[in-house]
Length: 114
Image (cartoon, rainbow, N blue to C red; front, side):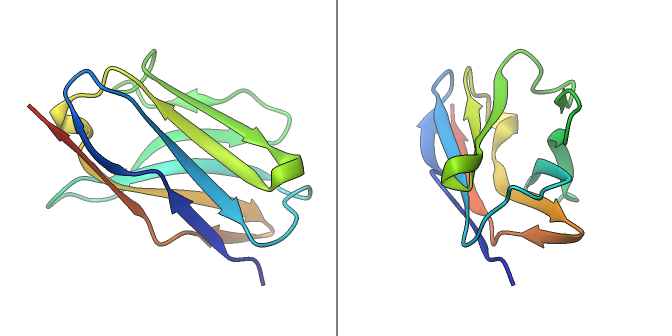
């Protein structure tokens, strides 16, 4: 059983930056896909970025050019670098790692104030 935990959220002003981390309790070398998702207040969870093994990373149009997803398999960690943050980026952010099964974290709150 792999546990996944996000961190790095917080309160930031418009135009600011944050880097989210997603750490797995075990090796993720066998992953088939990874993704970042978010759930804005009162809305459904939505895709932010998804990265299949061996394939390109795809971003939601709303974050394209501002967010960058990366990973360090040696550290069992994936990242989401978020720049030029907007109030509409306010949400709980979740990471997902697929290794046959989907493993989700508990989420980290990002609040962008104007």
